[in-house]
Image (tube, rainbow, N blue to C red):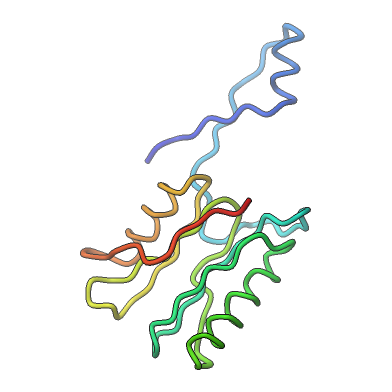
Length: 138
């Protein structure tokens, strides 16, 4: 697993002032963020899928996680003409949906960058899986 190193503007200010600071290490986010906050204009996304119809939906740029998840399930149900859509994943950054090789299983991935979200989704869907949908908030 790659470790992503991120330096915030505050850390840069401390470095510029000649102060010693440690590097903040940020790993791949979990499938569901532990924090829930509102962001402007919108930074939350969610992925949903229906096991009966195969309908998949990504919804991006919502102010809260709950709004993103609700929208993903709603649009998945509407487009798939079903009522069994479920959230695969939600979070900040980029999202992906992968389908198993036999098309029976879906998995969602979320990460800071698209490659990480794709890898998480493919890992969750198993061998022979392919990326069906992918995009980033922002």
